[in-house]
Length: 137
Image (cartoon, rainbow, N blue to C red; front, side, top):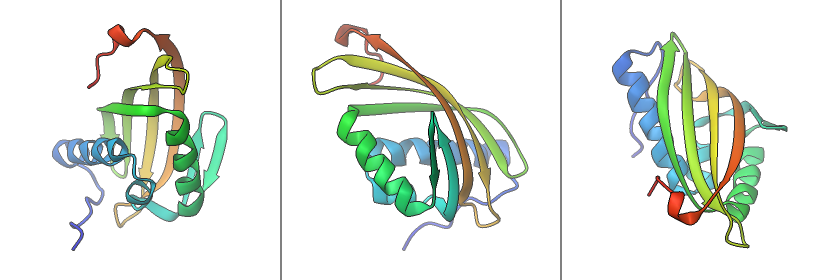
């Protein structure tokens, strides 16, 4: 049985838990698990990709994690109010050639009454790093 979702309006405690749950799900690199946190009609802007609905989310994540190998993410609560949460994040990954990257960004999240994310706006930048510069394990 799935746990009861955290629903808005958010408090500091519930917003912090929501961010940690998202971090844990994304670090699983399981597109099915991650997609279930989003409403069936969820809208994303991820860099230059515009994605709509769970199936497009799953397709996007499969493609992402086929390219971004050994992906590891850290999210930090930036702010919240009512049904919205803002996070900053960084994640590290390497490509098939072995080049490591640290990707930085911010996300704005909006949730429906059931606690599913209906909108995700992500701005992300990638910086090449050496493997010995990694800080997320």
